[in-house]
Every structure is written in structure tokens, then in C-alpha cells.
Length: 128
Image (tube, rainbow, N blue to C red; front, top):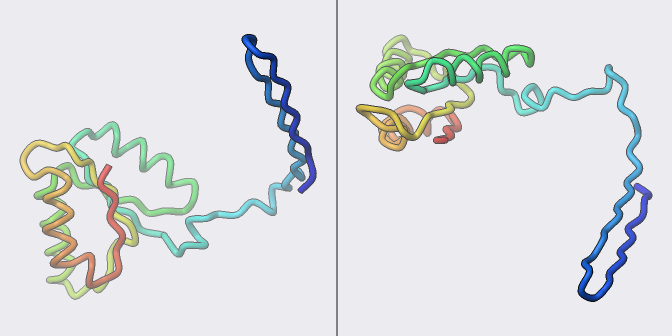
């Protein structure tokens, strides 16, 4: 990789660190979509704050991610139940859940869904 590290220290005055790293410039065509590499194309966002859900959606859309939202834990459980009733084996690759919501909080939502639906279908859930 190349580069260097230089340290200068004076008693009672402090220490200065200088780190120089040589990176190669990446051409636009070389940029990697890590979401695609992980085979993530469907995300469910569970958040009672619509602004937060919209922010995550706007962040993921440019990467080609289809984002669905649920505004409560109860709605997420209902969506998972519908998934099973319609015979879908997997609707989402990742579920992002707000941990602090009124009614059913994020942890309870994850517990109810993980045990019944997500774990069977290899769906990863993050409670933030």
C-alpha cells in the first residue's frame, strides 16, 4: 500500500502523529455496489417516524434497493403474516427496525417475526 507514519513527542507539550497513506483513485466504472454483492435487493423499514423511513428509502433507492415501509411493529407482523399466507418464501433480504416505537417496540417486533417468519427464510433483521 505504501505510505508512512511519523510521530513527534515533547514531554509536557504533547504528541503529533502524521500518517500518510497512498490510495489509488478509483474510476467510476470500478465502484462496487456492496448491496448487490450481498444479494440485497428488498428491504423492509419499520419505523413510526415517517421521516426516518423516507430517509432510509431515499438512501437505498440509488443502489437499486426496493424499500417497503411499515409504520408500526404490528404492521410489520401483519405484512409478514400476509407474506406467508400468499405463499411467498421471502419478501425482504434485510429488515431495519426502530427499537423504540409506541405499541409493539422494535425488539418485540423482531422476536415475533424472527421466530415465526424471518429466521426460516434467512432474513436479517437490525433493531436500531
